[in-house]
Image 1 (spheres, rainbow, N blue to C red):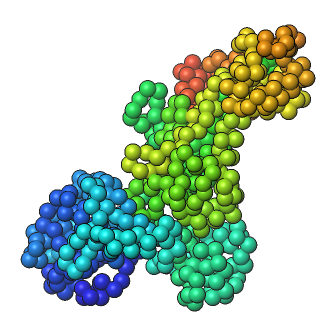
Image 2: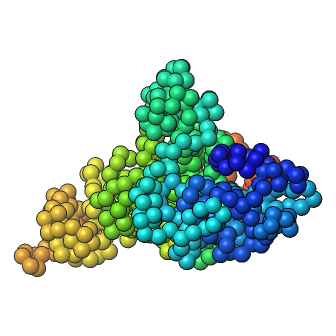
Image 3: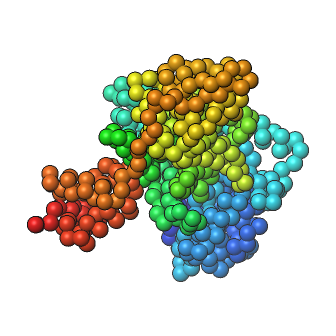
Length: 552
């Protein structure tokens, strides 16, 4: 492999050699040039400058452990160095795709940082310098050249660019699922199939060999998913008052698999509030599943895939769930206009998620999240730009109404179709507050007429009573409406229910989690206590453990 040959191929999606003789290394990399740079050390500034310059040109290879004269001085890749390198990459603004690997050269070891071309936007060092590779040099981008590059690299260019994979590389099962969702006949000839995929931005238009775009490769090629680095969703769970997570789960696969698997796990982990009002059990989800699904689908679809060292992060805390997506807002969208302005960084990716019914149509996603959170009487979601320039979405798992009050509104609402605002007003009235039109306007963030309509509707249902006239009008809970006698199940009641389940056969931890809407650790505590009391007997270990009634 000559240096000129190396410069003509993309490193991305191909395995770089892991072992070369000194002669092979010299033949492959006879000197520094447009696509190759050597560094003897690991200084932050020169490494960042090289990555930025390669990103703003056509990509290239940075080899650590080689001095300016091409002598191997050694720089073995270890866990500490890899962590430091990814931190350097993470501090760069909009780098190209980065892959870090080790290479043996004779008896020495070097570290290879392969950098892909940035397809949209301009890469900058952590101190704001924009550089471009010109021959052996990393030169500043200024004036006309900078403006021209900005005009060329528009948002969305990456997902539409050709990948190193074709339709022939697609996993048959993934291709079948995708064709079914998109209404494409998978038995078509390769050329017809490629044409159908290209119409949806998943293959390169006009290419008869069936080359996939990066968007298509994400859905069809397992190798592509691994090559993209931290193309995954990482979920971190935190205990009450703790800044350190006590559990971490990673969800990989296609965008569809990541969203579906992460949503299912998070909803199971968050659980629900189980309330008993009189004799009626109410299971109240702590987070609307549709709101969570939409937020994760948007994170997967709108993230910057060229930030290969960063995953989508979900931080699951006792009172809120936070989703952080690599890459900032694009196309003029800001945290202030996110409900009105619409722009898809990766349009093909989000369109396929819509075909799989994992995302709403364009322009409806943010409205759906807000509506679902309001319907569940949760505090309003927040859409922010994090300090590092990434998008941050906060979904509170608590609200202004307690689970007991919410369950009571379902109980007294009976056959009526109560709006979310109706339930909020009823809960406030339950607290003995004399409501006014002004108070309801502030509570629901609505105008005079909607507030008046809500109060009148609840009076017509017999749930509120009007007292006074004019400016002195007050609304209180109707005297015929019963006060709640709801309460959460006690530990002893839950244990009694578990023992009742045991009559029908062995009980698994998952049954306790699902039955009471509690986390795995809480369910284990309940079962462990029954074992200690001698009322259950445990068999098996881990997730396969079963609990049976002890012999009397």
